[in-house]
Image 1 (cartoon, protein in one colour):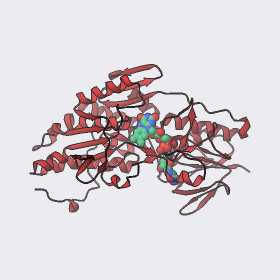
Image 2 (image 1 turned 90 degrees about the vertical axis):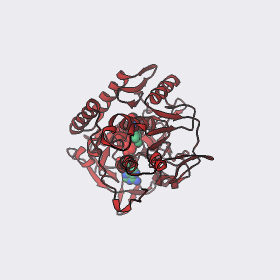
Image 3 (image 1 turned 180 degrees about the vertical axis):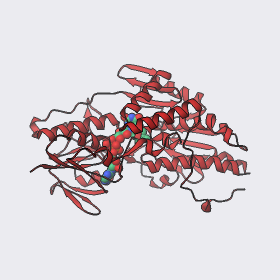
Image 4 (image 1 turned 90 degrees about the horizontal axis):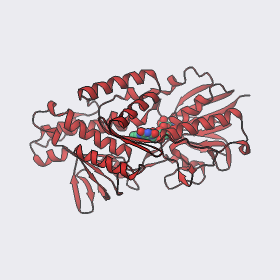
Length: 419
Ligand SMILES: Cc1cc2nc3c(=O)[nH]c(=O)nc-3n(C[C@H](O)[C@H](O)[C@H](O)COP(=O)(O)OP(=O)(O)OC[C@H]3O[C@@H](n4cnc5c(N)ncnc54)[C@H](O)[C@@H]3O)c2cc1C
């Protein structure tokens, strides 16, 4: 009888594993709580109105439609029973011979879940649409109000966390405010919007070489972003963000300061790090359970005494590696150790501006940005997405017009009058 392989998560790690098992004699079940595979690296462009959700997400069913040994289940897994080899969903359960947990990460507010209401994180399509609508609504409210203080508040945008996502988000907001939106408004000058990037540590883009961090900071500042380093937020509410007694009034905060594994990892009953990631073995298996594996953002894998970064290539390589172990039915003692092939780091700062680091090679500026464009188009899952993204980018970058400035989820009945 064919072995049953249950894969939790149709993201980078889960799909890589499923695809590498395409020709294996196994029955694969991919369970995901969304019906789509999301290309997160370009999610900030949905949040900043330059791409549509459909450009960067594709139904998991469609990705696996020709793979006859795989089926897709839409559902949220709430617990894993490793001794019974079963995963439980709200409605139903699945038994497995092999399990792959590839459930990614979620936004973490370090013990302040109440901040989420004012400072959405960027992980899902719903998050991106919420952020996009907040940004666009702020400009609308600023245009409407007669109150100067309220206008300043609406036109102040704060991004918390200066990793790649924070840098990309702050650069994108500044760019649309300064270069794209001005001709559309009559009463406000959108180019006077204040964009602040807040970081608790002493430099932006911590994963990069310090010289690249410095370069990125200078470019951001040239674009009008205020970069505030060594600044720890103590509170966030409807008025703004607080650093002890100091408050910056803002209606618009984006949180990109932390990620943690989803609570599902706790149900495995094994050792986790403080971010909830499973401390996996050198073959990506769960300690004590050679038939179970965790890959990608939900796993803590140490290489050269350092944890592997939460990046798509890590999840992809681990997913493929586990798929091969399962395909070959390798016993634990025969499995090779997983090695990550470093693909480097890239962060976009704005149009024609990026920083790229690959081992000892560092590039910044236009060529790094071109590199980002080509890499991201190449790794999008389907040709339709590649075509759609290329067209939208051409529209935006050549014409200075982000194409998706729609507000669709806001009910004007809830709007308070400030005039
Ligand atoms: C905004 C943003 C920008 C990024 N930019 C880059 C970049 O430029 N370059 C780069 O290399 N990496 C980037 N990353 C990181 C990269 O996207 C992740 O490292 C990668 O997605 C991890 O893959 P994964 O398979 O572990 O998880 P994911 O790809 O996140 O997939 C996890 C899947 O599991 C599903 N899931 C979660 N919980 C459950 C459950 N309980 N039941 C069922 N399904 C569940 C989710 O719906 C999701 O589909 C970025 C991430 C974000 C959020």
